[in-house]
Structure formats: C-alpha cells, structure tokens
Image (cartoon, rainbow, N blue to C red):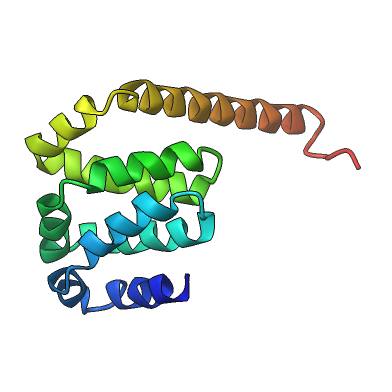
Length: 147
C-alpha cells in the first residue's frame, strides 16, 4: 500500500513522465488484477492512474496498456460504494475511452462491462437524487436538522 502511495506522490508531481516511462502502468494493472479487493491499495492505484492520465506521456502509457480497462472494471466491481475510488476509476476509464477506439472496444468486449457501467450510473443517479430530496426536506424545515 505504501509503495503505491510513493508512486501516487511521484505521479502527482512534475515526474509523471518518469513514472510512465518506468512501466508503472503495467505493474499497477497487474497489481489491480491480483489485489482488486484491497480498497486502500486500489485507491492509491486509481490516484496514480488519474494523475498519469492528465499528462501526455502518462496518458500514452495508459493507452499502450490493454489491461487498464479490465483492471479498472475489476476495481469498480469490487468497490462500487467507495465513491473516491469510483470517481477516479471512471475518470480514467472516460479518458482512455475518449482517446482510443481500441479502449472503447475493450470496454464493450468485456461481457459484464456495459451492464456494470449502467448499473453504476443508476446507483449514482439514485444517490444524487436522494441527496437532493434530503436537501429539499432540510430547506422545508427551515434548514434545521433533527438530532
């Protein structure tokens, strides 16, 4: 977990290209495939990926790796309620599928992927709507929350 945290810190700096050139994406995808159930570890991996995807060299490293999409889908399947992990994973998936037809095909070709993404969208939309309803009820009570 702490080694992934080190990579996360380096990938958040001006050394993104160095992290990408060192082959970190390949190793992190392999790690995600083997340890997808560890939420703390996967949170660090997703943070590395989200830092890399914003850099041209980092994004290219992710695009060169055919295992990014399946790895992130495993992570999303293992942690559908871990909001920071879901947001970062979806950000990376969105970025690589926006930039690459190959990655769009990889996403579509993973058998449960589309239902998984649609289910995630449905859960997030319901959660968002419920939070809006809760805010509306708070306003109707004059902003006073019950103890």
